[in-house]
Image (tube, rainbow, N blue to C red):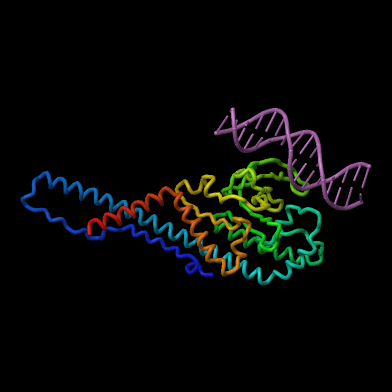
Length: 314
DNA sequence: CGTTTTTGACCGGCGC
DNA sequence: GCGCCGGTCAAAAACG
């Protein structure tokens, strides 16, 4: 899927409503000095406005580039996943039948590729090849995660248990076991597990009391710089945009978070005829993220007021 | 003072 | 039945 075809990311806000050449003001020779001073003041404020608009323009360009990059990364990831799906779906069906009754170990999630986290299989003979492939895909996943601002929920589109795993790079010195995904979580337990020296933290979604979603966070035993967050269940409320202030969107840089698991469905797993709806959802999410950026709203306001001024002049 | 985190106790599933 | 283990509960502490 092509990013430009999927989303029109051009943000032509028309933030330069003033033409390069402003119509020269013709001041009559007989005008009073008071009027002249007034004109000078207006010229001054006009140049200030022009500077402001230039700033806004460059901001607009930056935002456009940022969006383009996000879409590019998303498209690359999506293409990759589609390839994987077409290649692996029969295999997954087979392994699903072999899922053990025993609950999964956290490291099993680590081994499975994007969105394919599933139970442990008993077929140990094919495990080695499988594991090798998984490691490669995990690396690719990690790289793409970094492209998508290092955080992106992954949904199991094949397993109806709605379990997804997210890998978050963190400082090894950071022992907080927190993964900021926009939702509000309440920690209800912590446990040291057998096969991992670092403790596992258990979280419940605290946005809505009835929300059944749970999250487990544990540092990866293989790569301590990675946090492994395992999500179970589906949020029964609106997304994180309405709840928590994402620190990344408040500072100087703005981040567009693509929540691909909202509602428990992977966007990537949707049929093509459903994508138009998802386009709207994505656009809404982007718009929502952008409107949280005070700089963006200021730029938008400036653009609109500029356009209004232009229209009133003509 | 309400909310969140911490942490030891408890529970249930599983293997032996 | 017993022990192990992962998951959850709930009281106390910490925090804002």
